Length: 205
Image 1: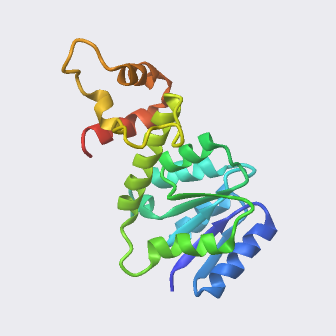
Image 2: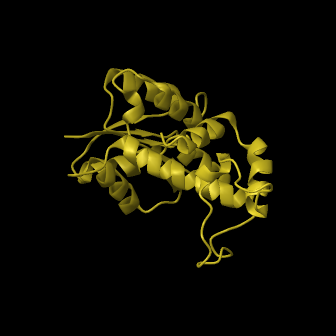
Image 3: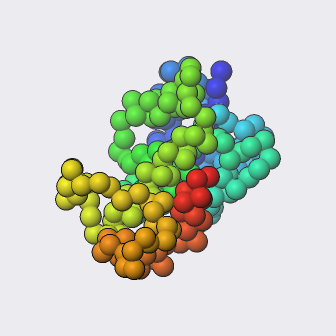
């Protein structure tokens, strides 16, 4: 029976998630903060994790970073879903770029939690690295659109979307098109981790 770790400093949230997961047939372990979460992972690596962001001591970002940096068992391949009251787009994009497969905001529909788990643990589910690459690519593309001051509603449907991988290509003409030139100028605002992911995508990794 798959084991799911629920990490949240709010007892009511932990209990709500636990009841719904156990009702669907999953084993559930809980942790009140990031420190307890890392200890629980060390004792018995779970098959999936629901991780709060804002917690005392070690927060969700630090836990996510440590998990995705691990190489032993491979802890980095444990599916992680962020469950948080922090709803800003920049935080969602950060979570997806740093390795979370979903960013679920509170209040949430318990059905969304079960859907997330079944997506990664159900029969024939893609591997975590495959799902993570897909989510990271989508988040980086959305980040690039935000950096250009665009959104889905203002981008013409019949206009070809500029692929992120082209940001690193040498121009075939003396000057870059305006959008690519602006994208190049804004590369300096990306974090080191975002740049590494962008370089990996550009190299086809």
